[in-house]
Amino acid sequence: MPFTLLGPCDYREEIRKSRFIALAAPAASAAEAQAFIAAHSDASASHNCWAWKVGQQYRFSDDGEPGGTAGRPILAAIESQEMDQVAVLVIRFYGGIQLGTGGLARAYGGSANKCLQAAPRRELIARAQYRCHCLFAELPLLKARLAELDCLLESESYDASGAELHLAIPPPRVAELQRLLADISRGRIELRPL
Image (tube, rainbow, N blue to C red):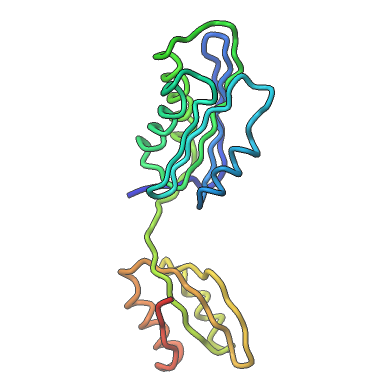
């Protein structure tokens, strides 16, 4: 089961006088991952190497390091930690000592790996999208019970009689949600897929 980060994290290490700063953050989309990298890259650093993975999409960059010595090991660290929807940036300040291609791969991959290992994470759960309409009187009770079913309230909009809710729920819990809605509304609330 894949995991993602709960929030941004970092790890710092000095290897043979070069400073490596690994920064990681959750990224729900490719655009979000690229925005994180652009926002945190340090123009004064020797190299800003990165990798991200969002579902089946992934990208990486060696940023001037020899091919395959930075971006690919960072991506390998993401995959070895069973992470998804994650962006990792490793910033290097060159210290004057050559590390060689093997040393670079170990430094970049190791920094990314240690950063991700220490980070708080959560399991990614596949969810199905549904919508329903409930009366204002039913809304507080329904909202209070959604967490019991691991159901997320993604959006709500109001009209004269109540609220239209957009929900995301793990597919095995849909029948429980339907029973909950029937109990709360005496069978009036209908759950419809989005």
